[in-house]
Image (cartoon, rainbow, N blue to C red; front, side, top):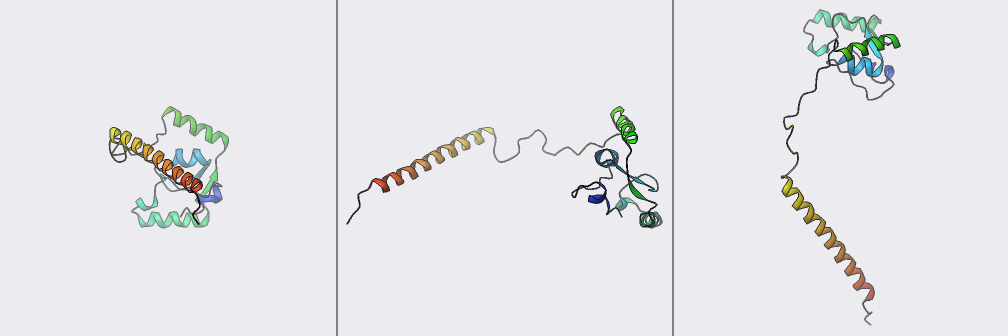
Length: 142
């Protein structure tokens, strides 16, 4: 239904529709809005009424429902509504591991393994350097 959103309207090839935070993520970010949508803008996957879906599809096809650029005045009004809290942005879901260190091991193990890795790299460099020095300074055998 909204295939023309990505690229043609926003001039961004990687733009994705965000129905949940439509005002903040789409309208204010890209300066475009949907005109002619029936009811509140929502994800078509969540619309159970087949007649409404058909009607929306027909409106997109005929141009009654379309993308339009925001005027600077409209953008200023929406921005003011967001800043005053009249238009709320749904917060993102908090990670299940918030506050926990991600990765393998704890801090002590990480410090030890980092030190061991540093020693190993230094040791390997020394071995390589010694092998090169020995090869260069070794007398040729005939």
